[in-house]
Amino acid sequence: MQITATGLSKRFAREWIFRDLTHTFQAGTATAILGPNGAGKSTLLNTLSGQILPTAGTLAYQHQGQPVAVEEVPPRLAYAAPYLELIEELSLTELIRFHTRFKPLRPGVSAEQLITLMYLEKSRHKLVRDFSSGMKQRLKLALALYADTPLLLLDEPTTNLDRTGVAWYLEHIHATLAGRTVLVSSNVPEEYDFCPALINITDFGAKAAR
Image (cartoon, rainbow, N blue to C red):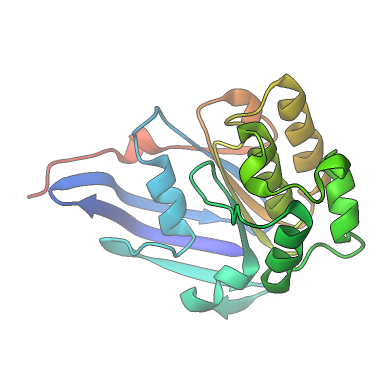
């Protein structure tokens, strides 16, 4: 999926989070959105995904050469972020089955195979609320990485992961990159070292509203 941002700007109250960003995220490419904590990386990612409206500027989406309306973006989008909630009253197996009713897995990957890929075979009947923070983050990532979507957005993907979890992320992001447009919000080089394109949000930084 291609995303074209033209003059994209977002303001909360009198503070500009970013301003006048013009960029085309080409289909099939990986881009890292960089900047210090609190600079607005997550806000930009949420704006590009169509989840929040920009204050100014426009967004245009295309998939396989055809325009896509913003309301049609969610089915084509997979998103993982530490602040996104899971349904913790469900078991792992129940959650995957529920999630994949709306966001099918990539061809050839079943719910059982996904559990194996996460090394969570012994936790398939465990309630998600009883998972550690690292297990929850690995689950969020797996649901996004292995979703059958042309657009993948990752916000600080290795949050709550130990070194083994980070190695797992790096293995599986490389395994699921092909043919997707990937945006990674991060200030940790290890999370985005596979991205050939970089955007620093401070280049479009906050300015006082006039």
